[in-house]
Amino acid sequence: MGPDRCDLLCLDLPHAEQVRATLPQIDEAQTHAARFKALGDPVRLRIATALLTGGELCVCDLAWICGASQNLVSHHVRVLRSAGLAASRREGKLVIYRLTATGRCMLAPSGPPAVDAPSTADPEDPGTAPAGTSPSGAPRGDVDLQEA
Image (cartoon, rainbow, N blue to C red; front, side, top):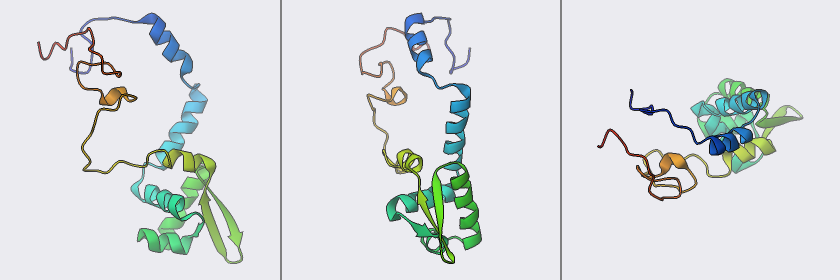
């Protein structure tokens, strides 16, 4: 077996069913995935972060802030708007953009981590629990066969 698979089949059915019941339906998951995909481009993430910090900004301001051409910024804010993360309004000859409530929620909770920041174990994130412990930090009963 590979290092990313269990060497035996085991299932904690009550816990698995409890988790399964909380999953979003496929159509809802597709909507969420499209929104996260819209933030998956570094230029769009910078634009969205600028909108989070600056509130309402026109394309000219966003282009200067992000160091990108107005055409490129225009394209990227359209993608953010199509994903429901940004909204726009016309003010004379200017188009002013802002994040929607959804866009603010997706960016505001923690922001992107620093690239060179050391990772620490987060008790709420099972992906950061130290090896051999549960998300709560308690020792797990299973054995890592790679270390044995």
